[in-house]
Image (tube, rainbow, N blue to C red; front, side):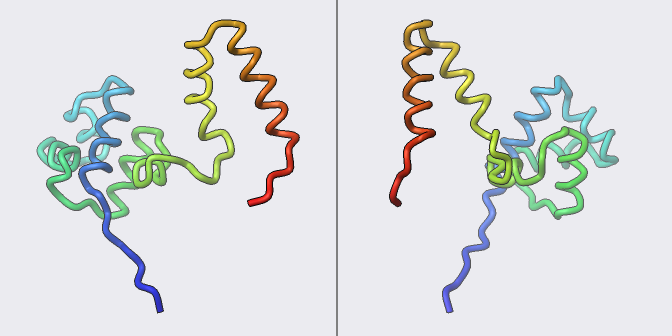
Length: 116
């Protein structure tokens, strides 16, 4: 039987929490108050300096309005739109001609039958 790797990158989870908190414009103190913990705890979590249980991670997820799987993995695999923002950002950096070319390529690819 194959062993499953259960290591969790606490630093990466902490970075994602910090990014979501900053995106909301909240301080560590504000997040701590919302989920009823001490500010130093939030600081340790964001640095990856302490483990965090699922209950607390779920509270942070709800408070920050970020799916828990995004905090853990960085993506929401079940959501077919998880690349929408990245794709939009790429398109915004392109000229109108390049946008049309990308659109035409995407239409071709979407209609193609690929063999894995």
